Length: 340
Image (tube, rainbow, N blue to C red; front, side, top):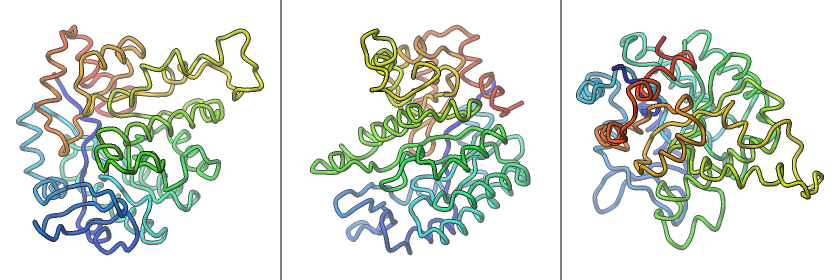
């Protein structure tokens, strides 16, 4: 059975160098005791990366393909690892994004049956970013845009980013909305990475970004826009009934809710896909499966941050019908123009 992995991350030497040179947060630093790489997100929060993981991120050749083969993964959808270029100096980010997109295009040309890619964009200048997305899709044959849950104190629902969203819809390519370090102060202290990072804060921040997009009416404005979320939807399928509450309770004042043409959960079922990345808990999967339907679930392993073996063992252990597994592993990908 074919397998297409929608969440697989990489880095380039130019991007890593820029991260070490970056004078603002986030930036790469060397741990003074271990001399290994880490991300300094703020004065208080540090994410341990380590040189072993960094080496895997930089591997865009035989080592990565060997891991794919060991796990029966036929194709990876490659995307630049967090924090991308979203928070770099705008001109630096723009230049690095172009180089990253060119690099991944060359990798795809070298291994056309094994890799496709999502574009990297510097959203600080939305008009220039939309032009780069068009170049990445039309000239470099990339399949979408991978971005992050916030741009500092700014979110993707801000109207200034509409040119990029409009371009993605026009090109017919999805946007992978990936977690990043939260902008919410209460998630940053005093409990460190356990609160602010991937264990909790990342998902909360991404869920907030997604709900802001829905309530902003973005899918009424761009009805064909597609968003992909990791981690089985960042807990939002569990909240479908609650998010719909203002739109189904008869006594709720219509002036106290954003005007939408559908209920919030309906947009999930028409405009959102989710991946299996990093949430290997059967009740969470079954909630997403029942709330959204199997046609909206994609395989995602979050390589190299997570072990693909664990992801695939989890899916195989769910007791799904073969036709459901086929949809998750590769058939749903064809709806997004990947793997056809």
